[in-house]
Image 1: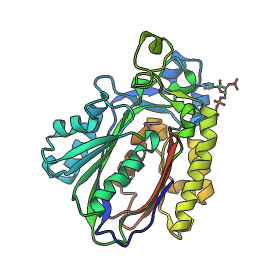
Image 2 (image 1 turned 60 degrees about the vertical axis):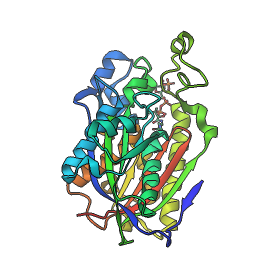
Image 3 (image 1 turned 90 degrees about the vertical axis):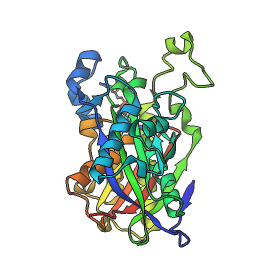
Length: 339
Ligand code: UT7
């Protein structure tokens, strides 16, 4: 477990100053799933809170990640050449190598940037955000783009009703910049991994342990494997514990918090987390109903939608929280720093 104290030695705080996102047009609603597996709109809605998700029909994760960054740059009226670093959180890279960050760099013409991918499943955006923030806080860079992008449809078994109804495709990105005003930006982070949970949520085929073969394909090892109930139980405890811990550590009470920004895996996990934090529904960012679980894209896309809807104001205190495969989980406390 890593906790990061409010560090007086920082040169700067890292602030999110821009947002962007891209969701493919093709919609898969619950009726569609009724036609391909033994399920119902009612079961999916009551058990997960999902109504529909998006499907990328052509190309890989880099297609969506590129469009999300282009959307961010357009809204900031900023050139790609200004970017110093691109971090792409994903578990569905276009290919093992080169990294999706390299593909995005080339697609957008970010000639002065370097970059890399980061794999932390549903916690990927939080891990990438904290990593990107370090480069800003140290004074090393001025413009870091952090992407959360996943084409979950590429690793979803559409004959498995337990899992296929959960996931969707999407990409979202934020821009981190420095501020000398320490009242704004990323204030604190608590991040965890526990690899002993690896067997409950994983994709075991295609890597160096089980290289692709007819056998790995026959055994469907190139798809997500999830023991839903087991993951549900640890996710509820992990999300609730880490969010209350970061609140206590920063002397925050529920009234101080403008929004909980949770990973969107299941509305019931989100509600349990909010309840434990003492936060009312109207202070919880939700988009799971329209996009399902888009893995590393859920948190930045919530930020993008709520900011663009004028619902986040400068000075708002946000608690970001996620739980995912690994297990990985964590929480970030930030103060929104732009109007
Ligand atoms: O994002 C990364 C972290 N992942 C998560 O946080 C996901 C955590 N898990 C979950 O969100 C939930 O466990 C699920 C949504 C995956 C499943 O909900 P659940 O309430 O835990 O259901 P269950 O797996 O215990 O299944 C209950 C019943 C079973 O039938 P029986 O054995 O009671 O007869 C399932 O076979 O529901 C059945 N079922 C379905 N029925 C209709 C499972 N999937 C479906 C389905 N439609 N799609």
